[in-house]
Amino acid sequence: MPVQLGGARYPKDSDESWCAVRVLVGTDVQPIDEVAASIREFGPRYTHRLFTDHELESCGENPITAASGLAARFAAKEAVLKILESPDSVPSWRSIEVRRGAGGRPELALDLETASRARRQGITHMSVSLSHGGGVATATVVAQVSRWRSARR
Amino acid sequence: MSDVTATIRDVLEAHGRMPVSVSTLSDDDDLYESGLSSHASVNVMLALEDSFDIEFPDSLLRKGTFQTISAIRGALESMGVTSAPE
Image 1 (cartoon, helix red, strand yellow):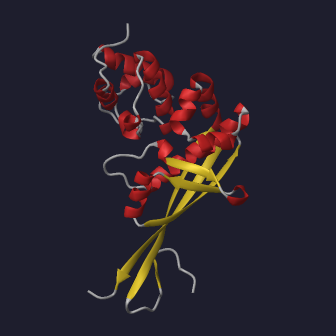
Image 2 (image 1 turned 30 degrees about the vertical axis):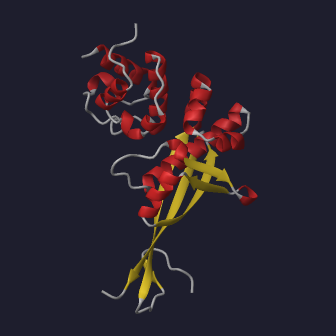
Image 3 (image 1 turned 90 degrees about the vertical axis):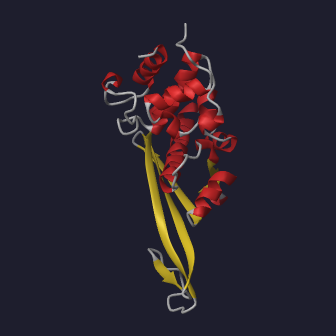
């Protein structure tokens, strides 16, 4: 039986314990020209503050294509930050990495501290989708939150 | 207004891409609510580094550091900045 999303129970008819599943969504847009302008003005000081080595390598040397890829990755980091609860402090941008997964599909990797924060929220999985066009880059992140509940009190 | 605060305001005006004039904001107004984007806050940070000849440590590379002018001044003070650049 597939897990039902949207606050559903799984297994649906269990009298013992069940898993409450819901999803959280974060999305963000980033003008590409702003990223390009920052690269021109601040160079590596800018890129290395926000992006991991893997992200910089993924976006390549060409400053035009790099700006669109990096803008999408910045949007992804912001989308993750919108999902994570941050009562005390906000994770740093480099603690959230967009990795190029199998077949070029983007995946998210979090550093230990940020991953722990996500686990405390019950987040068991995150997916990201990136896009750019018309001068803007966008990213949407969907997080699955699963919490096992016991029917016994 | 301290010289440090005046420099922060100048940097915000030049790099913050804000829809309102920084002169209309108090030191404790929320800069993000006033239109400062997360991305622009990075530019503000780098421009502050140039202005004060400092480098923000990783521990301060967070959105909260740039929430208000007072918060920025506090961050600079924590790095030993007590006066405006010459």
